Amino acid sequence: MVLLGKLISTGTVPKIHAQLTNAKSFHSSRLKGKVAIITASTDGIGYAIAKRLGDEGASVIISSRKEDNVKKATEELRKDGINVEGLVCHVSDAEHRKRLFDFAKSKYGGIDILVSNAAVNPAVSPVLETDEKVWDKIFDVNVKCSWLLAKEVYPELVKRGGGSIVFVASIAGYQPMEPLGPYSISKTTLLGLTKAIAYEVTHENIRVNCVAPGIVATKFASAITSSDMAAEKTLSIVPMKRFGKPSEIASAVAFLVSEDASYMTGETLVVAGGTYAHL
Ligand code: NAP
Image (cartoon, rainbow, N blue to C red):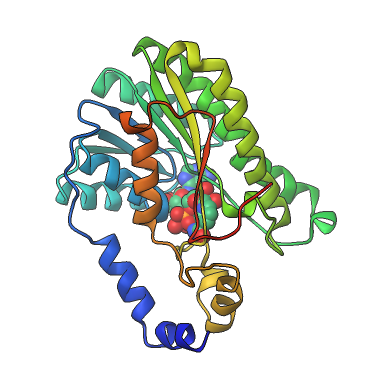
């Protein structure tokens, strides 16, 4: 614990994080010829997934709510040699989602991979004290939009003769994290959504899997990672005693969408530094 506090206060943890985020491209060609849509991908885990899939040869379409973020992330990925296009897409907006899929079809001729990564957590409260509007917002973005994205991409994957969908859940989906109750439940729901859809679409050569990241030091998690005290409490449940890096989640997703995972569907891969994960 003391060592961890020291690492964080000397800035070593962010430095390690930066090194891994900026790590040299992998340039495996496992995903060559594939077209991948990653939602919520201008920052954090989604951005790292876009970069990794692009590094492995996929043409990627990134998106998020804010145009400036889309522009900046697209430019950065292009500088890294990624074949990327960026679009504004708020996942709750049906028109935005349609535009995303239409764009992928017109630009690249189809879609092979969907990574549904968007999530919100607008307020924290114990489950039974949660405001109904907060509950609805969490379930709308985290669950309903994941389902809608899968439903809408399905015919496109069928047209390609198969494909892959990955949902981004959370370690909190296994063990609700105080005080992230409703958010945790929404992520547990994704584990069920993964299994249910997977079994319905295997006959179309479509695989559906999920990744459950542990705590990753992104903007989203800053409330539980940015101060020494919060970090120490959070890391008390992590055997590796460090936060995950976005690139470490991205590599798991790249595996799941590749042929290396050809016999895997309906599964959730936990990438959480050994954190106990059992429902
Ligand atoms: P992040 O670094 O804060 O990045 C969030 C990204 O999502 C940004 O690009 C943001 O851009 C975009 N975004 C937010 N709301 C959106 C919406 N409604 N529609 C479209 N784009 C949206 O977050 P993160 O930590 O990488 O989290 C990504 C995923 O990992 C989430 O599903 C989260 O639940 C999951 N996860 C995170 C952790 C963690 O510790 N960080 C742990 C487990 C699971 P704009 O602002 O431009 O929209």
